[in-house]
Length: 67
Image (cartoon, rainbow, N blue to C red; front, side):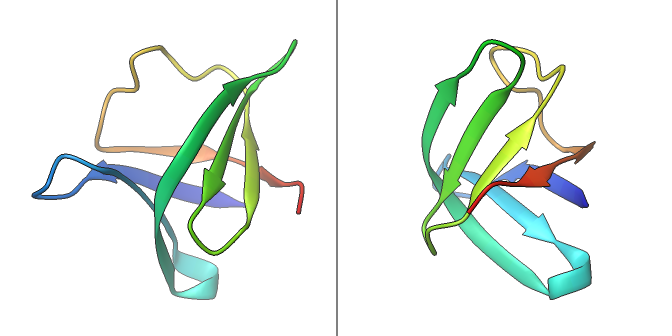
């Protein structure tokens, strides 16, 4: 799925999933062997490959939902 990453006015990383009309704050970021995993405030985990560290925003990326 396509996910737009951006920073809100408070400086928090946000993820917007247009197909689900869902916008949530990223509460945790972890690095796996092949990709970065972002945990959203609603409990979703998104796996994103090829993401720079630090994350440049705004950007649209392809993600896979784990949970």
